[in-house]
Image (cartoon, rainbow, N blue to C red):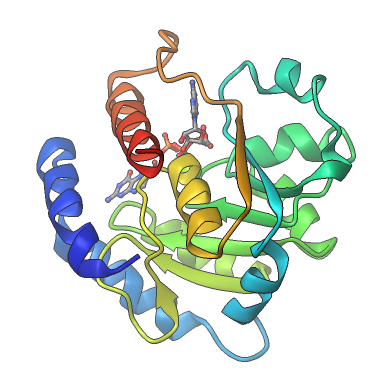
Length: 209
Ligand SMILES: Nc1ncnc2c1ncn2[C@@H]1O[C@H](COP(=O)(O)OP(=O)(O)OP(=O)(O)O)[C@@H](O)[C@H]1O
Ligand SMILES: Nc1nc2c(c(=O)[nH]1)N=C(CO)CN2
Ligand SMILES: [Mg+2]
């Protein structure tokens, strides 16, 4: 996504959530410096996986497990949002791509990564400690930021892990995007998560005018 198009939305999110742009920029620079030829994937691999394909995006709402019963995972290229990865791995399904800010069940994400999943690792002002802990344990990484992109840290649009999955699928030309595990009206969430879900709903609606 063109950063000029994203930037006004990003500024509104920062204001609403009380997050710091400087923190996000610092995280992007750190992530950029941690990536090298041996721990990174090339974005051409994302294009090869997604372009012209039916993509399944899995969010981590409690309904995910139930909704997975209704589909055949083999019919889709699968992108999981952070905590949703464990739900699939527990069912012996390895996603093709994991979009994560590394605050879900990262041990399950490492298992999926070792089995071949590409990791779209998102750096932001509140996960710098997670970048230090987990980036050295991962491979096939694509760097991601919600601030201005860098040479090896991309901004495909989107904010929370789930809506970033959908923006990634759109960016690389998915034929269709099927969402499972999205419940924007979930009442069993804390106030910060509620706000994140409000943005997730708005951003996903924006993808489908
Ligand atoms: N009811 C829901 N509860 C949790 N996640 C949901 C829900 N509905 C949709 N999602 C999507 O699933 C994604 C992955 O969920 P996860 O719990 O791992 O969240 P997250 O983005 O890492 O959030 P946080 O910043 O709170 O850690 C979320 O980013 C969100 O977009
Ligand atoms: N600065 C900051 N940015 C984020 C955060 C967060 O907690 N802080 N959480 C996200 C995942 O929903 C996405 N982006
Ligand atoms: Mg997360």
